[in-house]
Structures are given as C-alpha cells and as structure tokens.
Image 1 (cartoon, one colour):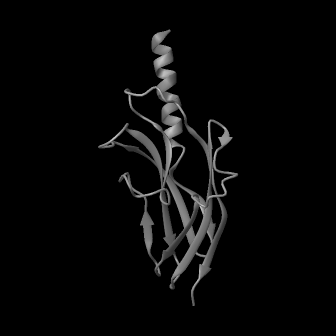
Image 2 (cartoon, rainbow, N blue to C red):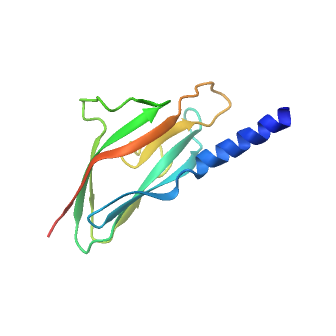
Image 3 (tube, rainbow, N blue to C red):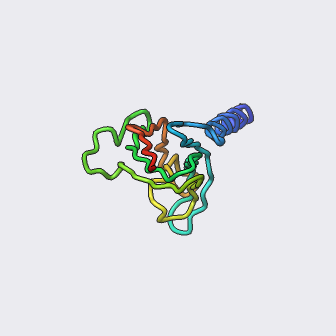
Amino acid sequence: MRIILLLLSFFISEFISAQYNDSIIQVENGVTVTASNAECSMKNGFDEDRILLTFKNENNTQVTITWSAKMWYDNQCLTCNDQSGEYDFTLTLEANETISGTCAQGEGKKLQLFHRFNDENTDIDTELTKFKLDNFTVSVDH
C-alpha cells in the first residue's frame, strides 16, 4: 500500500510540474506569454516551486504591457479584491525582446509566481491552484 501511495504521489507531482512547461497562457497584439514550472533552491528560507513567466515581443517596435495578477491559492482567490495595486504590473519590452523570470530572490512578482513550498523543513502546504493575467493589454509604440 505504501508503494502505491508513493507512486501515486510521484505521478501527481509530475502532472502538476508538467502543468506549465513553456505553456502559452496569453497572446495579444504580437506579445506571447508562456509559463514554466521551476524548482527554486533558496539561500534564505524554504525551497519552493515557482511558475516563471516569459514575455516575448514579436513586434518590430517597443511595447508596453499591463496586467493584474489574479492568484488562487487552495482554490481561493487571494488577490482578486486587492485595492493596493501590489499585483498590478507594467512591463516595457523593446522590439523583438524576450524577458524571462528566474528563481532569483528579490526579482519581484512580475515575472514569477509562488506555486508551493518544496522543502521538507516546512509543513506549510498552501498551493497555487489557478492564476490569470487579468486586464492584459499591449500597447504598441509607433
């Protein structure tokens, strides 16, 4: 029974980690956004899984992108009613530029989303169950 549970746990975690593997999550006005899962080893704090975002500008001119990050943890949207502007983002990309999130601490929330802790030293099991780039707009500068 223990082996079956271990295998089931492995397959479930593999499914979740495969959920975002350069998956296209947004396309608008010459900009493509993809998401990928990443296991991040942290120098300070607990190791964690993140979803890293990549923004690719396929235009021959600069673009300005705006969005609000809506994030559901354990099926509850924790950012949907946020009025502080903390989850409202603006990103400017040069012509044909691509920018990607990394595991670097301090990079900010613009290019990465916390998915869950991946560390045996914590029993915190909160998990990102859904996210959306809401009010996503691309302004092409001419």
